[in-house]
Amino acid sequence: MRRLDIHLRDTDTFDTVIRAIRAADPIDYYVIPLEQRDRKLINVFLRDESGQALMDNLYTCLEDETEWRISLIPIEATAPKLTEAQSSSQNPKQRTQALREEIFNDISLGATLDRDFLILVALSTIVAAIGLNSDSVAGVIGAMVIAPLLGPILGFAFGAALGDRTLLYGSTRTLVVGIALALLCSVLISFMIPVDLQSRELISRAEVRLDGMALAIAAGCAAALSMARGQGAVLVGVMVAAALLPPGAAVGLFLGSGEWELALRAALLLALNVASLVFAALVVFRLRKIRPRQWLERQDATRAVFLNLGLSVGFLTLCIALIIILDLGARISIG
Image: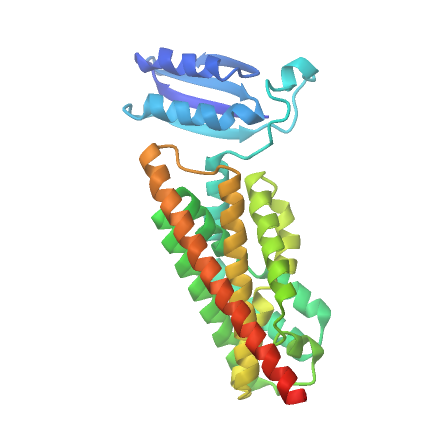
């Protein structure tokens, strides 16, 4: 359940807003008069499944007005307890989903290129590089948890789903800068410590298999679905499963030690994971019907989604071909 606070001017639009609220069949709503005589505050207790439709209707009602604001507040509990008739929806099979505005706020924060993002990337790269080189599973897992690279990937997919070019391009910039910083840090670390090519954790990041793509796609689906349902806590497990930073740190360590073939394999693993995550997130956001409010914006978003899906499929196909070629080459050399 959520509470929607609508702060607006007392004009003819007020009655239209009230009708939109009633049409959404809320659990309850009330109007609060304010000190300013020309303003009112409406508190609406929403059912989970009716929130997005009401938000879209309110945007339509108020788009020609000025000086209005809508605030969305999650409700943890109420007293007295809601009866089953009050809490159940008209469609009991309706899936729980966060509002578009809630998802946008959560994802855009994770896709922002700021000082904290850069510091986290640098620190997680240091932890990953040392963990890989010392064959420390705990260190590698710790780097996966604190690495923030999943945020811009979800931001890219969500920006495409909404046709939001600002979020799309901003997430791309954040991801590129994050990966470049991780490579730079890991290369510098390779000059400071001797790279141990006997480390199983390090060498495993140069092993690229098709089951890794399946794992990344499953992790991407889980990440997008958890964001769509407003369950961001699940992302910690997804970060571990996606394993974005360790391959990036491995690329830098291999480059610094002159192991070009191993660096290429680790880079292929990193690219495969990123493409798989983007592809999976795009599909999930599309299936969950996350799209813009306006019809024309929906057309742009649809084109952006299918364009990026096509690019992702093409890149995944290229990665699969490279994996098969590398495997064949390895088998021929062994034979």
